Length: 132
Picture 1 (cartoon, rainbow, N blue to C red):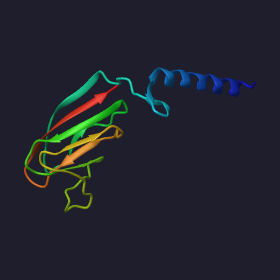
Picture 2: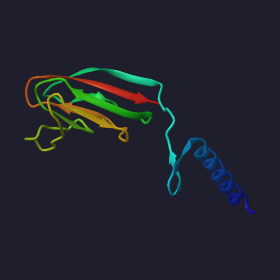
Picture 3: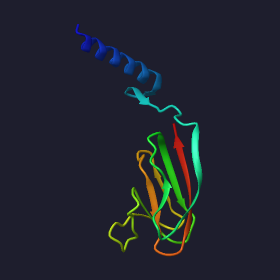
Picture 4: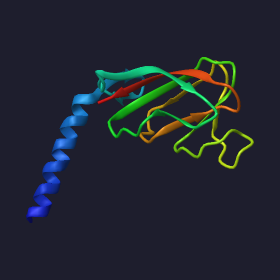
C-alpha cells in the first residue's frame, strides 16, 4: 500500500470514528434510523447593540470562527443588510437585504462582514454572534 493510500485509509477511519460518536439510533417499524447530531460547538459569544444610520455601518466584522449570528431590528425603520460598505437602501444602486422593523435575521453559514444602513434617521439593532 502506498503512503498516500495509507494516509487516506487513516483519514477515513478517523472520520468514521467521529461519526460513530455523533450518531444516535432510533428504532422504527422498518428497522433502525440513524440520526447524526451536532455536539455543542460554542461556548463563546459576542453580543451588543449598534446604531445604524444613513451611512453604512459595520455591524459585525468578518470572523472565520463564527458559528452563527442573529441580528434584531429594534427600531421603527427598515435596516438594509449586506456584506460590504457600499450597501444602500432599496432606492440605491446596491440595495441590501431588508430587515424590517422588529424583524430578525439569522445565519449559521455566513462568516463575512455584515453592514447595515437606513434610509433616514437611525435605528438600534442588537446582535448575538456565537464563535468557536
